[in-house]
Image 1 (cartoon, helix red, strand yellow):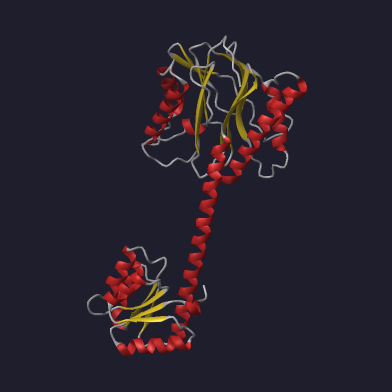
Image 2: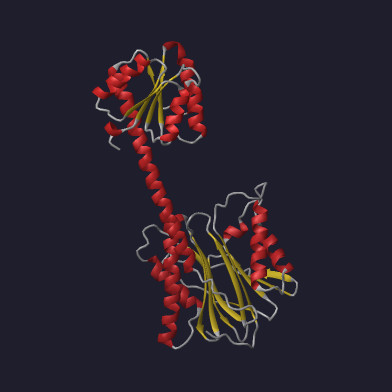
Length: 394
């Protein structure tokens, strides 16, 4: 903003005082000047015109300077309209109150030309800087909103019909505009489904980009391996491939905990790797249990790692529940976490329910537990059910 073009409103009930200020401001190069003889006229002018700066006398009839400032503050105009109080020496206590209410500065009577120039220039420059910060903030917020939309569009929301051979539902809720959690599922062959859930270290845009990179590598690596080798890769092979690729050009030392596996729909066999992630929960026959073997290291942290293949056998009534730590670490009113035991109990209570119903119930219980507290971590979960001896197509 060119300060010489600033719209300045001079408010004083004494005409001579206004005339003195007008002349001095004109000598300083200001041309867009307006006057008001009392507080009410000033407030009417501020409401009707964009005003950059108000030189506001404290003591006036009808509405004094404090009342004008309070009204401007209540109407949330202080970001756009800066206020400098004009005061006599006997009014300094009132000026202090005005500064607490949001006035930028004060000018003592009689006016010193050097102080007048310095304080008006400083206030207008600060106002211009704040305006630029707001513009940049709005731009950043708009970009983050678009990034959030794009990130959520990356995860698979085309869930198969619940009555088909595979019933899947998943939920992902980033704690910030963008997050580092991911889930994915896609067919490798008509009878084998790849399923994954992961959590990138860190927060915000770096984690979101690492998440996108991981998802792309997982899909491309799995499908290319199948095309070249003529067979479905073992989970450990895919984990090793991802680890080698994600360790490259990873100057920020990001890593991802990842559980990735392949479901044989005809048999209900789920072969998987657990690279530093929470163990899967198998819920069936009125109970829920988790694998208790130690997890392998996360992916992307250290090169040339070997990973262990594991297996879970799912019966027709079983559900497989995969979550990120934002679920277990959700805090309640007294700081207690949602925890693995509570999660297992909720899964056991919903045995036999469709994947969507179980997933939505778990999310509801986690959010109820938080009692509206701010989330500091992404919340992601995936529920899978299969009906062995049926096949998946598409």
